[in-house]
Image 1: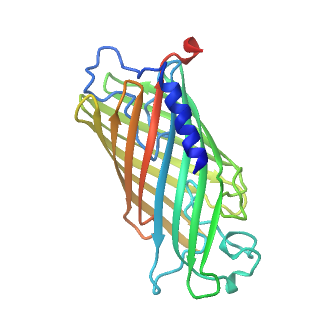
Image 2 (image 1 turned 135 degrees about the vertical axis):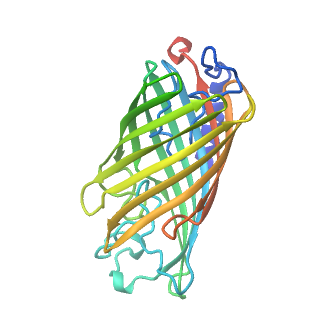
Image 3 (image 1 turned 90 degrees about the vertical axis):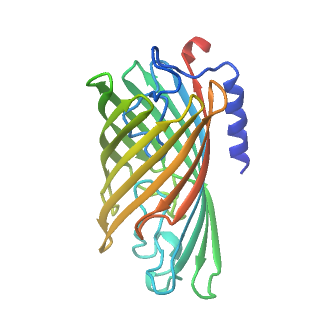
Length: 312
């Protein structure tokens, strides 16, 4: 996508005057707060640090498909926190303007998701940021009525703020709030049309080259969008100054549209520091339950800028 290449160029230019934040007194091959998760970056305990800026562009290829004897994927969605949105009376989703009982059945979804992210440190204990998603998806239907349907557009913009408190030199806890703004298209199934609020709490324990932690959140929306319990645990293991391994277990549960949705998935990945300010993050994920995406692969480019106001 053209917009992806443009943002990558901008980040590379920003990397020229930047350098990676290093926490004083910690060996470079140990885990620091610069070591972050992928799926729940907004919701984890770590913060970027006072006056520091983290910019990232990440892309993900994802797939979901079902066999003829499984429920179809009508209503399955890219939207954060929700894997399905109600088609209702045919006013949204894959049915377009048709009634649901005449809608072609979705059997496979191939998608590309690109996120432009930013995070800024407010003092040493707080962080604010945003995430702007862009989607491209291809739906394959059962039968010959509509063989495929392709859609591209922006998704719902997310703002967040969070804080953390150190309980000891190795343990921190915190909390925050995500606000999802309805910038995505309901008609194209890429937006909810509702403002959503996701308060969350988190915890993180760090010991040398290892960090573990997790979060619990509860997303609340208006309209016919169900509320969603979201949660995660993670492990970060740093092998050297340049390489770190990540493993995330992510879950979402909600009851809506006459059924329960239980989305569980594993997200393994690597952080490869190619310069003091630039990290490349290959990523994969594998669905555990039927309600999760089957699989996905991704790549992010991250630039850390220390004391950005002094540079400007």
